Amino acid sequence: MSTPVTTWSLELTSPDELRPAADAPAGAGVRIMRAEVPSAEFGRFLYTAVGADCAWRDRLPWPPERWRAHLELPGTEVWVAYERGTPAGYVELGAQDAGVVEILYFGLLPDFRGRGLGGRLLSFGTRRAWDLADRWEGREPTKRVWVHTCSLDGPYALENYRRRGFRVFDTVTEPAAGTGSGAAPGTASGSVSETASGTAETPAT
Image 1 (cartoon, rainbow, N blue to C red):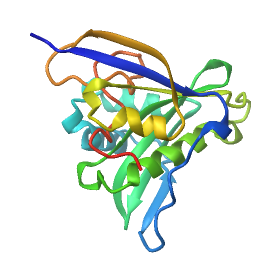
Image 2 (image 1 turned 90 degrees about the vertical axis):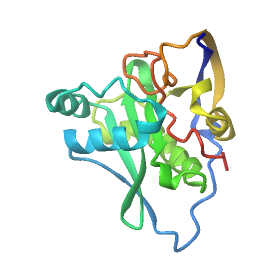
Image 3 (image 1 turned 45 degrees about the horizontal axis):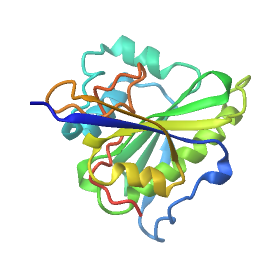
Image 4 (image 1 turned 120 degrees about the vertical axis):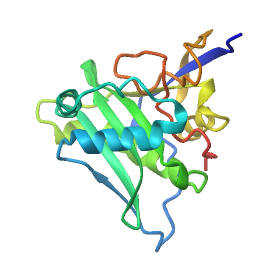
């Protein structure tokens, strides 16, 4: 018997609503950089490295051409966190109409969870959602940032977003779409077959 899955959609409607996590301690060796060169191989690496134990699967069949076409979409940005030179996690942003930006994917590789980096990466990525128009000529200034998460993301995912100031604006409960499925937040199609919250096991800080 499948367990029902609850999906929450959350939003910020002003940059002032963000409650950022504390900065990384001096000497922590944490840097967050934008992956400005669209790379199908790197995109797939991040997706599989973060999502393997979260049952991310919607993009697994994508050939390199589709990865590259997606990453080249205007308003799509991938920001990667590194700890002492090692990729630790990422946040993917997708611009939508009317000044809306969605956090399409957000998560950490398993070795980096539970150390406070998730809150810092989410804070940084949310700020970049708010100033995304500064980097894309002709893009309308951001008026709203949103994301989904679900009950399969683990005990900390929803609370992490709430701690950063995100508010729930919609809740949907439905049967699970199969074993090992996650939540809805990361799919560009809005499907509820996987999660964008790879920090499922990361306590919010």
